Image (cartoon, rainbow, N blue to C red; front, side, top):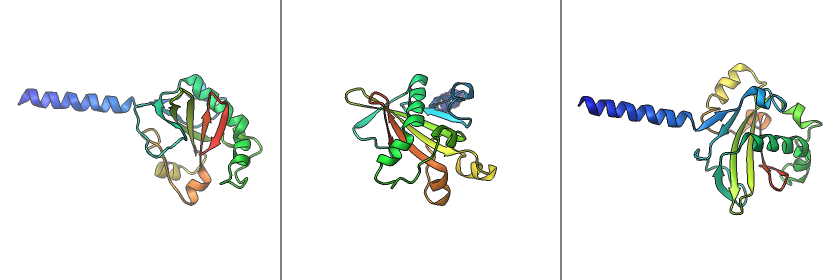
Amino acid sequence: MYRAVIFILLALLLASFTRATAQVYLSPDTMARYYDAPGVLFREDVAERNIKIPGASLRYTPSIQDIVRAEELFDSLYNKAIKADSRSGGLGYVPDARRYFFHYGRQYLGYKDSAGNRFVFIHLLNFAVEEEDKNRFYRHFGKGMVWGSGGFFEINMRSVYAALDASTLHIY
């Protein structure tokens, strides 16, 4: 009986360790040029079924260089992507994307298509909100994608994906 209890405890410990390493918190120093809020990269073994990037169904874990490249594409192409997206009607244009989204935390997922082209999904959440709203809406920020609809999320959430190999950005 004692061995069974020890075995179960070790299995639970291993399972919690595996779950805790399913994401990488990005160092504020690494990403300080792009934003000052939390950033988390979800590894390829984190399943996210709600996100469908056309033609890209294989998950991969982006490198820091991939994340930096995605952020550069975001900064330089965000307004062009807004203009090209028929759903937005041009709404969402900002004079300076880096400055406007500087206080938005990031959640990243990596995808590849069958040809090996890389895509980084960037989910932006405004962290310059009341502490009560952060605790209420973002409490699972590091555990999984934070989704919502309606007033708060319409104002404080954006999603895009960067096609790294094609150097394009798309509104999600």
